[in-house]
Length: 283
Image (tube, rainbow, N blue to C red; front, side, top):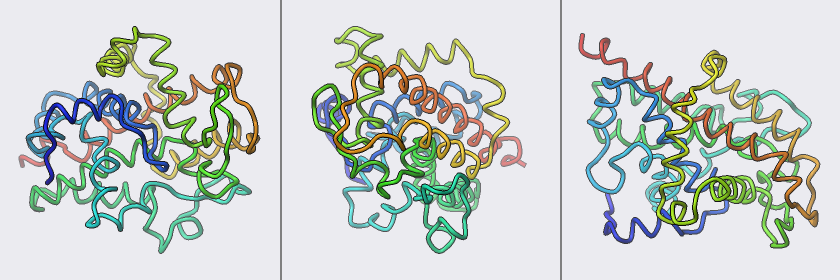
């Protein structure tokens, strides 16, 4: 696996641009990954640490961005590009595997199931389980992004050009990067945001706050997709190219976006607890 100098990695974590199809941007993925780590019990944390590599992606937070940071740049993983999303027709409000997922398997919903099965198989080589963990972490986050499931432009809002506080952006980028960035920058000093501490501190705040029990009552990725469809319909379907989005839109959507990031981390932890059941795997 490619290794980056630590100094370069630090710069990338802070200021790198986000690929057009990335979900939640770097801050969002790091935040959800950290939430997941803090939500794991110590035994599962140990099991995860044993699978992760030493180096650039040795924490669950950093590993959460591997699928965008490394795999998207690699010819070896070009096949995985179509697994980051599912395009449910905007006239539909429920995900149906046979209708919406290529070949019944090549979309984010089914990829979570598939990589989960690989990760839970202790007879698999650690390299295969590590790759599965990298993808699984990222795709659970992606599925909680409303625009990774449905939008009328058929490209998750990437073709919908709007003006975000006067700057032209596509709607997908507004949701994956601009809203979380604005949220963090309004709550933490600029020095903490630039140093990468803002997302770290927010994850700790959420952990102390706890999460609603009902979040964990929905464990089926198909239902996570249906939640995203409903949110996309409510908050993005009415946004068309040329619209100006300012503070009123931010105030309407910030809590939605950040709740989905928080929820993704909590649900990821619960999924990892199930897949890496330490007591089961030691028997």
